[in-house]
Image 1 (cartoon, rainbow, N blue to C red):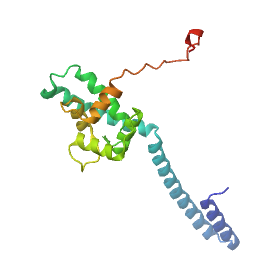
Image 2 (cartoon, one colour):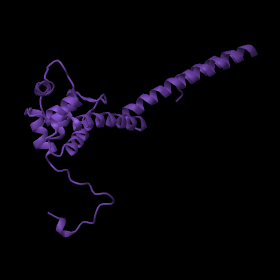
Image 3 (cartoon, rainbow, N blue to C red):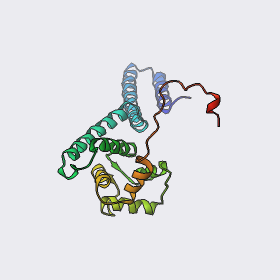
Image 4 (cartoon, rainbow, N blue to C red):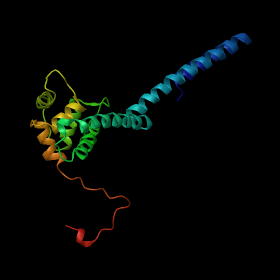
Length: 195
């Protein structure tokens, strides 16, 4: 099936051919070239937008930039005298950074209500919209802000206050050791593996 630009171009070309004017043919060809270039640029812009939405090279670049930004914030927390007494602070910050990046759905460096909802659903603790708003207000300290920044997230996780979200993350998700995924082909099954 032909696209609309091709149909328009062929119709105009047939009309020009009927007139047998060489000057009009030149004008027509320049119009076609311009039209196709404009169409190509809009199509390539659409592909760039799709690349951003689906991942790919641009997504990897965005995630690496986000990781660098979060590493800078982690460095500030490592040198902060307020958290000097915290044991194994570097590994905790690294673990918090990975969890934060996993649930930052809008890729703006903040967890919105949908990211929080997804995080809790992955942990098996689905919450209502009202409960999510209450958790966010408890973490951020204000009900008017609808996102959790990385600084707020770290202050909650490292702070002395026992926010509901902190308790959920510490005891349900982050406290568990994740099983190491085997690399390579799956191992051969034996009778002892059967239930």
